[in-house]
Every structure is written in structure tokens, then in C-alpha cells.
Length: 346
Image 1 (spheres, helix red, strand yellow):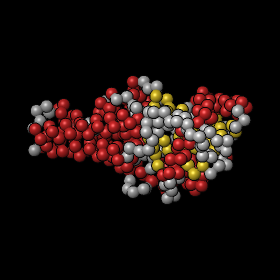
Image 2: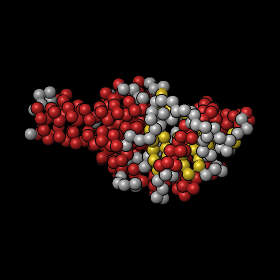
Image 3: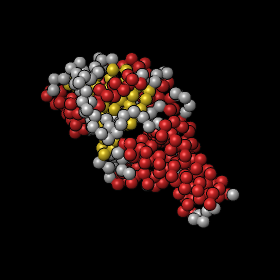
Image 4: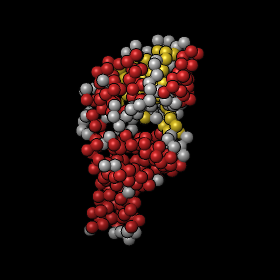
């Protein structure tokens, strides 16, 4: 009976994330080209960042993505190297307006984005982090989708490319964390359920100003803090699967991956115990089968159900986003890494 109880707990912990992934699969079909639109909505596009090469690549994608002259483009470099790249781009392309660069310091990306938002003239603003690569018509489709969903902020969760072996293991967990775990952070439409990624965000200017802009997000939680600032002002936010809209280079090595995943993990705050339980639930069915191969029939069936739930949730996201399928079967290993990281933080 004790084995059946343990196996029942394993299933109870493993199944909810699968159901949440299924119910939260959002928005834009992934991994296929988006045809250019004849007309894009008017908007101010703010490109910000510290990587000069990434700034050049992203500006090129932005200019190719937009098909409307009534769109302004603002560049905010972080540090002298990015500032010089922004100035050179603006000198070559009259549609670009280069703002004063943002010096290095605490939260430079948030400060740079805030500077660009304050200078924006249009009623809609799109923030694009340097190094984010865009599909054709990505900006227009994000703006149109924001209007259709009647939200004040809409963020796209980018696909990661050029991944090393560690990134291939860990980075596909980011959409899983957002779709399967963020809903556990609070009830209804409260701030704790909000999520966003700073790679690509579309906002209404009035909502952005009412929320306090990017300054309201100053803290360790990055784009999540911005979405929560909107929710605190009773402004609606949303996040979509952006695999068909944009992609970014994956961080390198274990430290880089944990640095990018950290804000999502830390955003749970007081719900840390729930996060630990859910991550443990990704391991328990496998540990149960490995540690006790002679399980009673009922317990074995329950354990296999838990294993299936873990793999199904990850496979759904892998097929939807185009992430490496093999990473889904390494979910217990990846969840162990994240669990150790969560437990190590006090």
C-alpha cells in the first residue's frame, strides 16, 4: 500500500504541469515562415542593447519587417561600443533615430528600454532587445495580435538557436516553466501569474506609462517584473509562443543557462515550495521505477502514468516550438539541475 501511495503522489505532482501546458499553448503557430503583410500598424520600435553585432542584426530585421512609413525607429545602445554602432546605423539609414546611449550600471537594459519608451511618439511601442532575430512581418503580427487579444502588453517567448549540449538540455525548459509553472504563482489575473520576455514586447503607450514604464520593473525578474507592474495597475498582459516570430542565440554553458532561467525560477517568491514540489514531481516517477523495479502492479501503472505525463508535456512544447525532441526525454536530468539551483538559493 505504501508503494501505491508514493506512486499516487508522483502522478499527482506530474500530471498538473502536463494539463497546464496543454491549456496554455498560446498564440502563434511555431517554426514556419510568416508571409509579409501589405500593411503594418503604426508604431514606435525601440531597439536596445549592449551587443554591437546584435544591434546591427536586429535593426536589419526590424527594417525588413516593417512595411509602413508611419513607423519610427529608436536606437538605444548600452555602453560606448553599442552607442557607436547605433550612431553609425543612424547615419546610414535616415529612418533611424539614435538616442543618447545608456551607460553600464544596474539594470542597463531596462533603463535603455525606458529611455526609448519615453522618446516614443506613436500610440503603440514595440521593444526589441539587440540580438533578437525577427521573422518577416513579426512586428506587425505581434501588434495585430495584441489588439485582437485586447491586452496592454503582449510578449513573445523566443526560440533559442545555436545551442551547445548544455543549452539543448536546459533552455527548452524556459517555455515549460512559463506554460506549466507560472500559472501556479497566483489566482485569477493577479500579478504573480504575469510573465514576459524582454526579447520582444508590444505595449500600448498609455498602458506603459500608467504602469510606470520599464522603471517599474527594476529588480531581478526582468520582463516578468514589467508584466507584473502592468497587472498591479489592473492592466491586461499576455505572452505567446514566439517560435514562429523571433529567435535568439542560446546562452553558453551551465552558468549562462541558469542566469537566463534564474529570473523565472526566482519570480515564484513565496510560492517556492510549490516550485520545488513540481520540479520534484518531474523526477519522482522515474526514481520510483529505478529504485523499485518489483513494484506492485497498481503502483507500477501509476509510476508509468507519471512518466508519460512528464514526457507528453515536454513533447507537446518541443513539437510546437521546434526544440530538440531528445531534450524532452532528458527532462528528469534538466529538472534535477533546476531543482538543485532552487534549493541552493536561500
